[in-house]
Image 1 (tube, protein in one colour):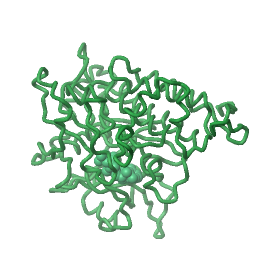
Image 2: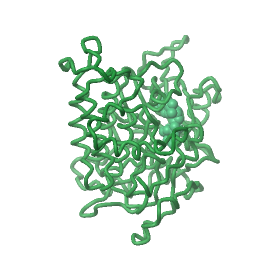
Image 3: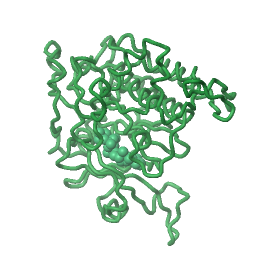
Length: 411
Ligand SMILES: Nc1ncnc2c1ncn2[C@@H]1O[C@H](COP(=O)(O)OP(=O)(O)OP(=O)(O)O)[C@@H](O)[C@H]1O
Ligand SMILES: [Mg+2]
């Protein structure tokens, strides 16, 4: 991590924590610039193009052409189109009370769609069916642009997995660009872990492992099940959204990239992502691999275990970068307990903590080829999530930990 900048990552300065670097896809050899040249820039290359046309062109040029098994059929983009007026009405003209949050793309609002085809348990007084959604409106002065909008519609519109947020549709009318998603009632993992959510209860160990396993399954779908496979490129706490019972779903696919095909090991591209989560090898060379996502996943898992932020400028210098802080501790089992989130108050299984730390340590290794494949991460985390910890039947150890008394999995 020494060559990787530790700036940004502060939630209050969200927009500046995104990193982007000039496109170097045509010059592989020049990709060895120091990572500290990474800077924030606006990405509006295709802003003037008609988004609808771009979506259609890209669908045929990227996803369909590379789908070399015609017998499986051409993947269908299931995203619906909405008029701007429909979305104005759904959000009460983007009323402050409906505001959910803001990221690099723009503001996010809760919305209620009337007369939807989808059956919902939410029924308005007039008897119309209401579908609760989250609506993300592109900020024309923001960090992201039409490219991210198009990639989001393409990737999510084609995807279908219980651990990916569902894209219901989009609006590309005049200058307006909006995305409509299923509403995730418990907000983002970042909100829960780092206290941006009012009245949220402390995440217990079992819930943390459940979230980690769910997020890993979403990533596995992108890497191993989608055709062509997709590198996510923006895995972080704020992009893991939570549904009822803390069911985790990955969101935000604006930076997603079709993975290397054939004998290629990487995709050369501009460096984009978020400080603290971006793999150092990718940050330095611009060579994007599936292992770049594995690194980001390892950072998220470490955040879940420690309760610390990937980058925290309020801590002493040696502790500001989570991975840099954790690396020496990973080497000494006797120090593992120091890494458990103090908020857990010792309520975690010691063996489970060791195993979770081992998975995280493997994922954040400097050498990308030493990091595990997502399938192996899923297997390990599914197992860990199935080992339910019951604080009532465990005893507190001398270090404020509890000994291992794990309940049988409820399967
Ligand atoms: N589908 C959704 N359901 C409920 N809340 C959502 C949904 N999508 C986004 N949000 C809320 O809006 C906030 C902002 O999300 P957004 O993805 O725009 O930005 P971000 O992830 O914080 O930052 P970045 O632009 O760097 O990805 C989230 O933290 C979350 O609280
Ligand atoms: Mg996001």
